[in-house]
Every structure is written in C-alpha cells, then in structure tokens.
Length: 264
Image (tube, rainbow, N blue to C red; front, side, top):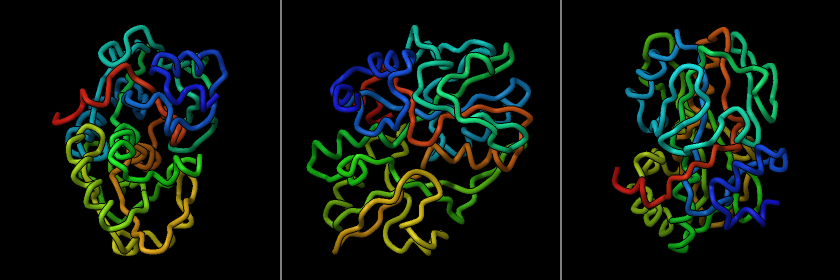
C-alpha cells in the first residue's frame, strides 16, 4: 500500500485511511502534498490552545481550525472527515493515553474543535529533490522524535517541553537543509538545533520518545526540527478531561501542495 501511495494525492491517502487500508505511518506518502498534525479539544479548552499555538508558531504552525462539532477542515481539505481520514489516532482522558484507534467516529462530540497543524514531513520532498537524504524514508520507518529541555511559551492551561524530530545529515547537507526548510515556516521551518543532543536534554538519539531510531553514519550530525508532537506533550501535562490527537507519524494528508506553504 505504501509504495502505491507514494505518488498519490492527499485525497487518495485519506480515502485509503477511511477504508481502513492504511493504518501505518505516512512519511513519503503523497509526495508534494502537505501533511499535518491533529489536535482535537473540547470547546472550553480551545481558546487556551489557540493562544498556545499563536505563542509557539515553530512547533505549532496552524493550517486550519474547525468550527465546534465540525469534522471537516474546509480550508485545507474540503470534503474530508477528520474522524476517519487519518491512519491512527490517540485518545486521551485526563492526560492519560487510553486508546489508539484507527477511527474516532464513536468518540466524536458536538463541542469538539480540531486544530490542523503543519508538519515537517511537508518539506521532505523538497529535501530529497535537492539531493538531501531523509534517513527514515530510506529505512522505511517513522521519524525519531524526542522531548527536549526547551520550554514552550505557556498559554492558559497549556505549557510543556518542545518536542523535536531528528534527521542525521552531513554538514554540507545540514547547511542545504537549513536553507530549504527556511522557506517553509508553516512546516516548522529551519532546524532549532544541530549537533550535540545533550545540549537540548536528549540523552541518547538511539532511544527516541516517539517514532523509530534511525542510523547515524560516520561524519553525520543529528539535526533537530521543532515537531508537531509538541501538543501531545503539553496535553499530557495540562490533562484536559478529553482530547484526541494523531498517533505520532500517522498524519493527515491535506489538499495543499508543498509549494503553497513556501514563504508563508
């Protein structure tokens, strides 16, 4: 299925999710289409989270916000359904992960507000086109993600650590990647750290908090980007009575093209 969807559209990937045919990670799928993170919260928690995103645009670049009870993000994927169109979700109660379903229709409520947030998978097509390797796609695994000791700017009931994704690169490739990713601020933009993982509180890059470990080869250094899993870390800390997120690496495919986010 993954190979068939590599050159598919965002709508094709969503349809495969809706049919229950795609339940795995989405790196490398629908190349050229914008991938997105998902956070779903009760309306009474939505303003605090909107403010959190506004104060932390690097890890939480907003692409769309739905009306309460509406599962359709009309501005990024008209006709889609956030209850069924992702490969896998996480359901949270009081900050505790209670389920990882492949659809959330039975959990849906009329007071739920959905936040569609930019994802670093978006710029990976540009990296590969420029000859910059993307190791987790090469190895056909999920991107490694880590909690850091960098605090996000708090907002209302939300606070917590920045989560980062990592791609190992040679120094020359790291420079090129920084130049390329700077063009995509709504997909996390340029890296937030290069080199020593310990400087940002990561003890061992071979043991990610989310996703899969990847090979770091001779001469390469780990390069870290702000990650849209950050909201999951702050949800765990804020402990809302109910929340839904995407399962890390299992993203929502929009109808936006990568080039539409350049320079925004």
